[in-house]
Image (cartoon, rainbow, N blue to C red; front, side):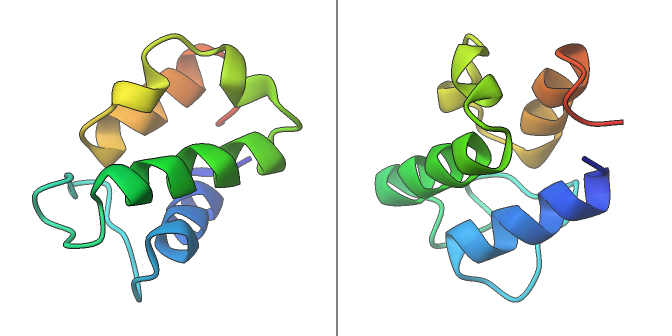
Length: 77
């Protein structure tokens, strides 16, 4: 999975036009507790559950934290 694909999927999960690597939960209105669940669900589906094993991913407060976690586990190139 590429960074661009992750950004596109985060935008779908958060129901916004686009998401940038610099975005945080405070910069996207829909990134609330339900938005966080939507992110986790979307990532889980896209990674066939691999993202479910990443400790702390559900607590990520920024796109960069999400990408860093996904990179660390070899999910994002």
